Length: 430
Image (cartoon, rainbow, N blue to C red; front, side):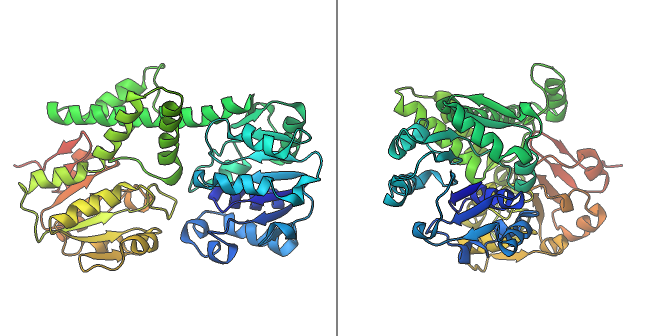
């Protein structure tokens, strides 16, 4: 099929690479804010496994063409939108362009996270001779290629048979199992995407609240988590306490869902609490550090492992580390930070600072001369450190585990103090 793909989001880049890979003729029009010359160099795109390889393959084989203007596009059978929520006006401008006005039978696939009902409004701009579907973005950053080419589910919002048929054919190479598609009306699909992320965020924030209570009561929250997860009505997914969630999609989907509530005349106290709890949890490690040093933190040096909002990505959008850094710097703390991918994004945001040293290769370099180690992002390279080496490097011999990935008793057996989220252990004295 001939596909015109518009946008510079990760979802747009992934769709461009994957659709071209299976033989569709894809013309990709990146958004003007991020043209291909700039987009091809950004770390978050280049760090996505397999993605740049397939983009370059499509460009070399000619199944993928990057264009700079709509007038350079051939007549498409499908228009695929992969835009950010703030780019709705550009989507409308594209669909109102006179170059598309005389075309017949185009299928619009809206893969953007726009307000509920926006796919219908965009369809109106195109005219009744065309079709439209809502195909909400469900990619996972850090494994975007795999989640697009081997999906476990796709939300497909459609109100006519043509749109559904064309979408199924377009994605047939990636959907050999019929149950992958969950078909429903367009508005239902748009709301379902937001509702899913709202539910996941609620589980995380609830578990973080329980972890705080466990801290106060002297209970190891891991026992509570296992007991809750074993209940078949609850399960273990997204039941891990931590120092807050971030990311461009997850965070803005919550805001979008709250906006939908307000615009419909309904105030959501629950969503407000979920977001408030998450922002408070981003300060959890700082509060534990403050308590340990009784507020005397000026001149201390803290090692931080992890800056990205999640493992496998170079992005720091809404990442917990940003809140943590601001709190530490405000108290005169020097930071030595290691992250295998997100250091360039961090420097792009905060610049070069005398109270920040960064490392990308050896995590132990960040610990040299530090008083404390904070684990913020659970990259696999951090899961099995040399504890005795860390004990010799950290002056205060304190480990603050923001993701609860370590065994408290084992860390304590190596002579370090462990403080997690609702978990703790101290070295045993003989």
